[in-house]
Image (cartoon, rainbow, N blue to C red; front, side, top):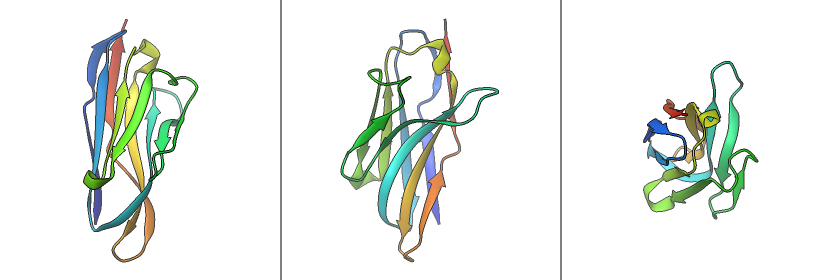
Length: 120
């Protein structure tokens, strides 16, 4: 069984910063792609940032230059450092991870989501 547990969301003023953390645990053999998605009220879930096992990163245009995704492979953890936050960044943020379990099965797992609210 695999779990992704997120933390670090909250309420922040525009221009402020938050750091999200997502830790994977369970019968993990390896983790390839890890990513952060977000879903604002009334909108579809969108990709914010993603990173591969070797550290390659891709960012949505809306967060480029303000957000930084990183990972600690030894801890099976992915981070999202969010700076210069804007009210339009308000959303539920979800982490995902493409995990191969000890049983040899690869699946995309999702966290439960953490709320980020940016006040103007």
